[in-house]
Length: 213
Ligand SMILES: C[S@@+](CC[C@H](N)C(=O)[O-])C[C@H]1O[C@@H](n2cnc3c(N)ncnc32)[C@H](O)[C@@H]1O
Image (cartoon, rainbow, N blue to C red; front, side):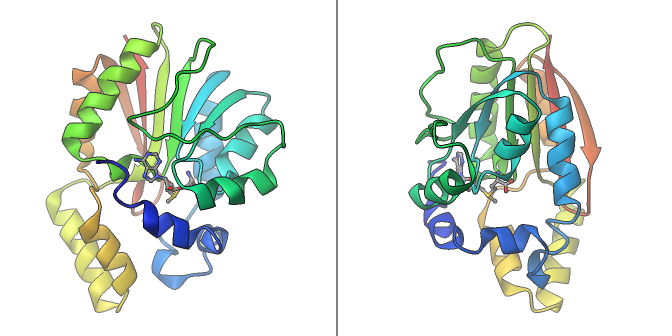
């Protein structure tokens, strides 16, 4: 499991960047403040980073521009191809995912991702966080931005709004993938041995920062 949504991203790779730029009305709110969200991830990250689910490479570019070393991981071949067009040719994009990826041969101080963590069920999220904690030194960080909801009621409110607006693609997405409740994510980070901080970035996206104790 964990790779069950890959086909969607293979199809989406060609025009994905138009969505993050807010050109599609259904996803405008989801990607609102996209640039600010990525900048915030950069400023919260250390210097030696694993990035999961790089997509078309927008966050990777910002991390590199800030002088950080990035080990980029992306399971979709089409997304890897789209990202490679933007990224330095010498940077190898690794075929892997949140659960299965080759370990870099240098110490890592941060695991980062944007719009990716919801591809795992809450059980899978718990397991990977424990794996990340084992790889990080004290004060190492997991910094994930993703769609999540304050409560079940907040989730259903957004789902109903999407249906009322005839945003069927967004509604289907919300029902299909594993968008968590913020307090659940906080609990999973704590149980894996992290101090946790959350910050809401728009109506959908929160940044969760776990600092290894
Ligand atoms: C919504 S895109 C986000 C791309 C990019 N991080 C961004 O912020 O624009 C989700 C990305 O996660 C990748 N993905 C899907 N399942 C994954 C998994 N289990 N582990 C890692 N990445 C995954 C997809 O192929 C896609 O590139």
